[in-house]
Length: 426
Image 1 (cartoon, rainbow, N blue to C red):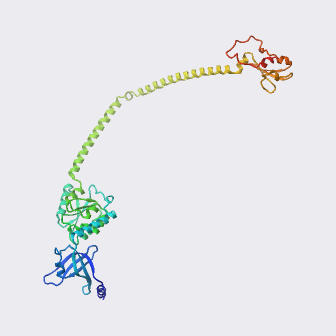
Image 2 (cartoon, rainbow, N blue to C red):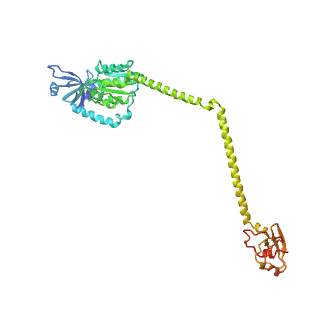
Image 3 (cartoon, rainbow, N blue to C red):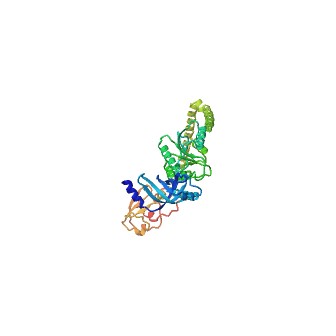
């Protein structure tokens, strides 16, 4: 009942154009119908296409397995067999130019997504533990990779995944093999390779699902598809692009002979460097051993003692010189200070008269009879009282001391108020 319901529902669908890839052609002479197995170019869906021999005869060149076609079909569901059938009224071949144009558009889309960006590329390990190899069954590409890689590094181990490398199932098989190798813990590099071929043979290596699977792979992938001029999209998304299978073998492992030569060269350089360093250090030790300080340890002590003694003498001389300069300077300053001091004038016999307000008396008119005065001499003060105004007004100045006047000094011409000497006697 379910098949019948599906058949009824499918029968309501109208005619549509469908693109597919041919997987099988069943055409016999005398048959009124040709059965062609087809699969979706993106999804995992297969069906039977039924058409007339005349529809296929119009195709040039003749239709073969792996070709892509565009057909106008009316879907049918055969309830007895439970099979979807596409009855085609018109079939057209998809030309190589159309396929290449679609690949170019896909390339631009994936480039815009960043799948081909250089910063996504993973570096290859220096020496992988195990190499995963996806290639055709018993193919020349397999022989080239394995033979040349083991010639460079004889102990290299491979994990082979033989798959179809052309045809309608090639892309799906390569994608599945890649997923299997990515799950193995000891695989360090994966190589996807096949020999040369025409553009149609290399179409599976531009499949979008395969390209996205390589981009998502956590293990570095090496693409070695075709020859130098071949460039499927796999070359752009792979971490390393090798021009040939032999070039892939050269890239995944180092050459053991080159490494041995490199080790020998580095060993020789290391020994030379060690010898040079030992010679240098030996000469240095010899120079140190010949140093007087090592032959006689007290030599350095004596040198330092002499240096301390010499420095002490120089310091004492310098200190004595500085003290002498400071003493001379102090004496000069003292002499200058005394020369400018009023005390020097008083020592020559002059006096200074102060009134009761402790103001210096410079004018006799400011003093009246009975005013109390204080007379400052060189050795002390003398109190006095003004008596006779006439005496106070005497213009002649008489030295306060009765001793013989001292010789004149360079400062004898300093002015002294006349009242200082006229009021000198009580």
